[in-house]
View 1 (tube, rainbow, N blue to C red):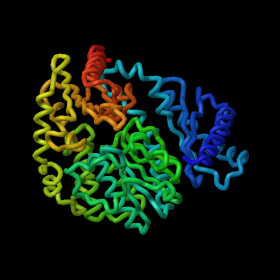
View 2 (view 1 turned 90 degrees about the vertical axis):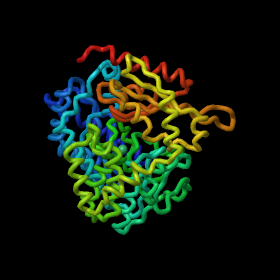
View 3 (view 1 turned 180 degrees about the horizontal axis):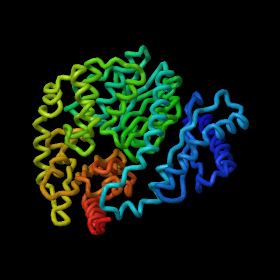
View 4 (view 1 turned 135 degrees about the horizontal axis):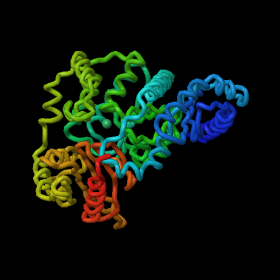
Length: 457
Ligand SMILES: [Mn+2]
């Protein structure tokens, strides 16, 4: 984020903190303004607050803030001489919330109660309008997605590139250089994909980050991308997204980033051509596990129908994505099955891929994509883990091993991932860990055992 915006945000936060205090509304409760993120053009600002008390209390406080919107906006206009007075939207500060409830989360056996849906809908609508406005105003958009991309990452990037180009805007696409595009989704052609960027080339470009739970997922060049591009737009469906953009649209209930993109495209008036629909469909079909995961909502199924109506060849996508497995990947699956060890009475199954395994099949990181799903599919398994041993660097140091976790839903694996600076969804998460493969097995076993040992809430 540019230094100027950081200062604007901090000044806005101070004025709003005073303003909230001055409201003296008994319905407000104990509200702290923790952060403000204004759009670069000041058309909109997201105000993050923490509220002392339970979820009901939080919803009441946010409603009181929405009611006081005009008063607070007038205060900003009076005290600051900004060229525009931003439209305010109020959000519960999830980061603070997560930190405070971590203990509690670890003990919880069932999936989290979804956040108060009424307030979430209002916040989402505001955020969506802000993203549509930011993209409509942009002339040049750099689209980027996460390292080790999956079908949703590549599909969303390809779809967004096509859609935004169709609006007559200049588009660039970026994927960090170490990442390999999985063979299964490589048929989606991303024209001119850049693997390194010259920071000086980023001035005047809007960044659209897709499917990235936090800025580090953009790769080593994320400080350049975030400081030189403006505004930064963060569109994602990971419920623990760090909201690293100036404008953020995060819907943890969406099946895929592709699903959220469709709402943005509709807001922008994008025509749903067959290539755009196909790329979105790849994101949708991979992130929903071919319309089988819990995220397969009526909305996801309706979107599937709409994309097929827009020209997607379902069978062609099936053959490209699911029936084009390379022989090496099948052999690697054999190694993964060989290394699989059950723990916790068979409720946890962990396997690993060594550097030798990958060399044997002439594979890379992308070859491991999807293998973990075979482990979770075993009867009685609640959690599956796959550890990927990383290559040593030239100086002899080791890149930390990477770990993927999958859950059937009883255990929230994103909680375990966050303990080691990772993140993800309740049923699919990942993290890096500096220990050996055996250390990591021990870590996963103890965290899963602890969650299994807690009586149902
Ligand atoms: Mn995704």
